[in-house]
Image (cartoon, rainbow, N blue to C red; front, side, top):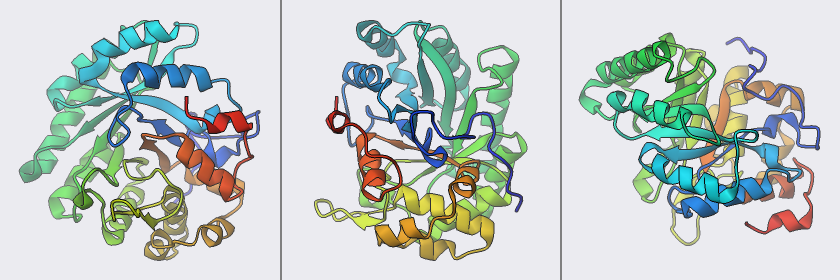
Length: 314
């Protein structure tokens, strides 16, 4: 598996304010999604207020569903965002292939918004390959008509479960179109958290196809753990990053995903340059909290301790 350098959309150097390169843009702000469910106006205001904080480059984009784009315009106006400093937005398309172009067009026309991503899930389990082909066609048409610029990242979410023949065929279609994969790693129900074996297989599938991927849900914390309130076992985002590196190096991916000792996991990480190159593949994860990931990285000694005032949620 070749280990290509970071693309222009990935981390190539540390942030000038001190955030190490492997963690730049690692978290996508999904504050309005469960279980956080932040009001949209509060989430946009929080983004605006923290964008000059020394750790703000940890956050890559603001994630919003296409159904809430009309509300987003009002929230942007209330927060005082402008075209000079627009909100980088990734739109989650809920209506399948046919809704890709309308959602992207709506976001592109909004004042104070810069469309940086489109995310769409495959929802036809009986014909994943055909569903993937329809999404690819819709994205191609949207690009041809100017709704999606060439630099907009498109992630296609494959369903949870084992990597069946149909699942792999859909992944092939996504990879052939040079789109990117998206994996759901948690949710509000126990069955939304994939097993170590499933997640390891998904990572392998992405790397086998030389296709970058992102994760969403359940990765608020750096290290694998069991939530004492829900009893759900969460994967850790640092486990996923380290497991991606292990897969590239021929290591034991499952053992890394299963590690629960945070200091041991952090101590075993490769040098920063190697870890930054790993972000070429594991691009980011969506989280309804951006402070929990930050605080875990600080606790593990992986990023500088920010000003104490940044430890209060906006």
